[in-house]
Every structure is written in C-alpha cells, then in structure tokens.
Image (tube, rainbow, N blue to C red; front, side):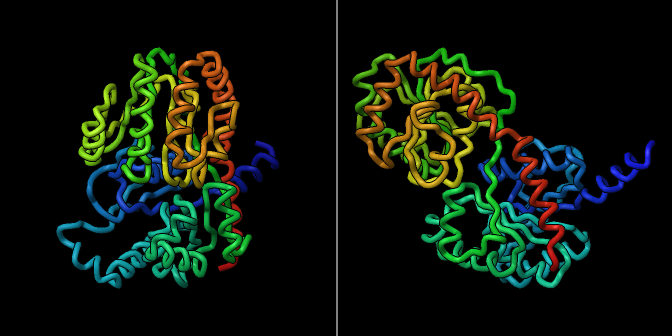
Length: 378
C-alpha cells in the first residue's frame, strides 16, 4: 500500500459518522418513513454507522432496512404513554439516550420531532439536523408545527427542505441562508423496468383523502367516464378513507372506479397503468411522481405547492394544470387518454428526467451536508 493510499484510507475513515435518524414510528407506511429508511440505507452502504430511533414500539419497519442499521425504540405505549405526555419525561429520556450513544449527528425525519430533540440535544456536542417534509405554507396553518420550526431555527444546526420553492419561502421569513439546505427526495424505483402501460387505466396513490384531493379526482371522473367508456381509474390508499370515497362514488353513480387499500407492492399497479394522476391540494415533495416517472408513466398533476413544478416538465414529461380546477383536470385526462403518441413521448422523456433524482445523486448531497455539519463549531 502506498503512502497516498494509506492517507486516503485514514481520511476516508475520519469522514464516516455515527448518525441517528429519529422517527415517530418506523412501522408507519407514509412517505416520510419511506424516504427516511432510503437515506438511512444509502448512508450505511457508504460506510456510516446508522441507528434509527423509533419513538414508539408499534412494530418493525414497514419498509426494508439494511441489516447493518441498528433499531432502538424509546417508549412502550402501554407502559409509558402517560409519562410521555408530561413532555419533560420524554425530553429527559431522549437526552439520556443521546448522551449514552454519543452520536455525531441526530436527524429528525420530521421537524415536529424538534419539540423533543432540540431541548434534549442542547449543550451536547452532537450536531442536529432537522428535515422538513411539508411545505412552509402548510406549516403556517399548524400552530404546533410553527412552534417546532421556531425551535429548529433557534437550536438546530441545519434545516433540510425538499424544494427550491420552499427554500425561498423560508428565506423570506428570516431563516438564515447558512442554516438552510435543499435536497430532493430520491426515487424509490431505482433502475425499474418501465411500465408496459397495457391497461387503459388512470392511477393515483396516497392518503389522506383531503390532502390528496380524491374528492376532486372523483368529481372530474364523473365527466371523464362519460367520454372514455373503456377507461377506468385506480385509487390506492388507506382503507380508513374508503367510506368517504364510496360515498362519493355511490352518490354520483360512478362506474369503473377501483379502490385498492394500502399495499407494500405499489410497483405492480404502475406496471400496467397508462397515466398517473396527482390531484393534491398541497404537497411537500410527492414521491409518487418520481415513482410514476421511474416507471415511464405520463403524469397529469395539479401544479400545487410544492414539488410538482420541480418534478414534472410541462409539455415534456406530463401536464401541470391549475390547482383545484376540476374542469381542466377532466379535459386534460380526456385529451391525453385519446393521444397515445403524446403518452409515449411523455413516458420516454420521464425516464430520462427522473435520473436526476436517483439515490446516488441524492446520497452525494447528504454526504456533503454531513461533512459541512460536522465542521461547524457547537
């Protein structure tokens, strides 16, 4: 081994970090947990020592975890549920855990967790990174999230936001530029086989009902199914929303609407659908659009805040339409369904465009943040 190689190995070893990702509950199937596990898996592959701390012990991770990731649970609901609500007990238990494990960096996978971690880490040498998955306008409507964001602004070393649009909104309200980092979420379908798009089917995935705008989708579908008698729509989400969907379907005598509950295998639905729909009232950064693009699906999306305009290239990978505009949604669905050539063009371009969201590119950005945050004085 040469001296340069030896020095390189030493520097490489020194670049590795002991990192703790804090999750509300790793058993959850939401996008926040999904992306959190993806980044944790990628950082372990790169040699970092990664732990996931789940606040509640409600079961194992819903999403696959690298076996080298250590998982801890902070609270048992039946035993500590009431103590957790005292708030001070929770902060003290967090602090004891962080002091014992001597992490280099603690990452909140949701800024709401800062109500505990910001205080628990105060005065410790551990660096604190908070990760915002909601857009700033949504945060303004939630007093609890505003309080947490204020804690992040005061105590955290870095705040990660998902979009350039959100970065600008945080700058406008006085978050220091040096505290902000913008990193997109990666696509979960790395090197996926493109969909054969064999079925005349629109599809949409997600929950909850109001956020994802499924009432708006079904209102549009009322007009679409009159014009496209050989097309159907699939809505894949949580069973707890089905009664509301069924109510709209029944009251409007809708046909060819297929409700599919929560699934750990969404890829099989992408494999046959022809067009993806996103009808959300708001988003943070919708991973489902990356999934659809990775599978070569044309996209029709409301241009809501935030995310779609930084993922979908208007007129190249899909169609961005005015938010909440049901008439425009229905019209666009009908036109694109009838134009297979344009669908093919969008599909081909989507497979190229989505490459900038691959896990290697996003992992590199996380590596850069880790290096920067470790160099900060505490």
